Image (cartoon, rainbow, N blue to C red; front, side, top):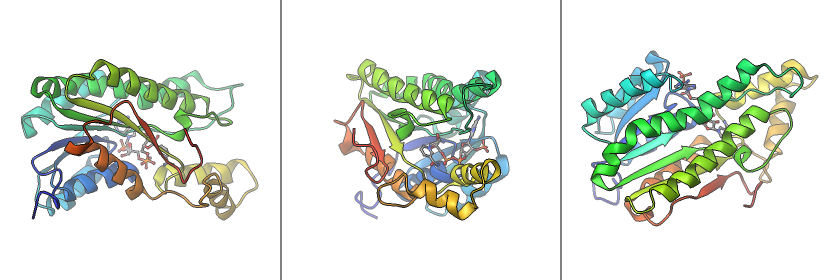
Length: 263
Ligand code: NDP
């Protein structure tokens, strides 16, 4: 295998929310590109099965059970990462949840859960893992935001606020770390074909008269290409941002949405 075939050879990556959907696709793309990967989520069974699969690509793959909303658990996760991989080169903050609710009657618990899972976790995990990257004067931080981080939609105030927050955090941290050798970028997908979107479709059918087929079609139409994005398309951008040759790209929020949002 040449360096071109293994562009992440010798790199150590941590991916949160690695067990499903976009995180799983990113972990797979990184493992295929030669990286060792630490797979973080709450479901141990899914992580262990994925780690076994990814080891077949020749690198190391570690399942690490951690709720990224829990600061103490994040601290332990970071210790485990350093014990297993002796460092970190790439951090992907991908774990997230989506729920919809209108403002009137919005449960405070739901607001807090969404903000903590989608935004505070990025702060906690990055703070816990950035020091080794600062010490080695190189690193890549990739935050999976959303086009909901750039525009507002109906009935998703908490999700939208959290993703605007992720893009703000990305830009502020990119500025703070600009001379550290660490880049910080966000990826902003439109609707992606993952369990999260399946749950959104189920929610629409539950609360409206729409069939699942019509609900899926409605989500597909939010993309000018009239389709859901594949998780591998998001992984491809996350891989590109992790490359050594992407060192000049920082503070960016790159849309993967079929042209729905053009800024
Ligand atoms: P999925 O629901 O398919 O997967 C979410 C992943 O996050 C799972 O691995 C889940 O594992 C993990 N996770 C959730 N909560 C926690 C937590 N508290 N601690 C640790 N891990 C957690 O989501 P997607 O793959 O669709 O989404 C991934 C990211 O992409 C999210 O940030 C989402 O907001 C964003 N995104 C998704 C879009 C879409 O249309 N699907 C569009 C735009 C952005 P477990 O439950 O085992 O912990």
